Length: 154
Image 1 (tube, rainbow, N blue to C red):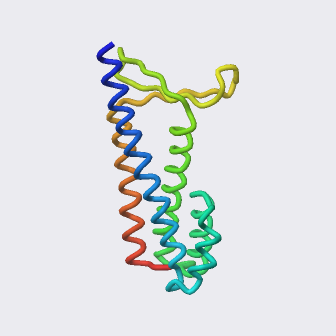
Image 2 (cartoon, rainbow, N blue to C red; image 1 turned 135 degrees about the horizontal axis):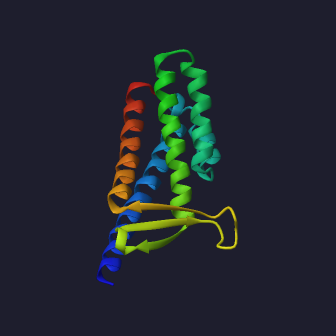
């Protein structure tokens, strides 16, 4: 029981940090977008993006990138970032919309998405180290967005 409690505590802590990182990333992307074009559309974009989810913000960024940086090296850099951001978005959806179980003998946690009665139910197992690596991926994505903001502003 002690092993299960320890795994649960570490998983919950790491998932909590992931939630913090994701919400920071979402907010920073929103600010990046509303301040695009030197903030000339700040009020309009603030209203538009205030209730938008991360996916809609990513699509707006992609549109702005295509308008400003099409056929440039910056477009490719943004393309890779957007691809990674969509992967993190999908991961976040699975992690936070699924339910969790614990496999203490294997030092793993299991994330299960879908109803138990559904044939589409899926289970993904993670070690604590894997969850911590995913947290680092989220932090890296935020850092890369900051670099993009500086190097290739919208």
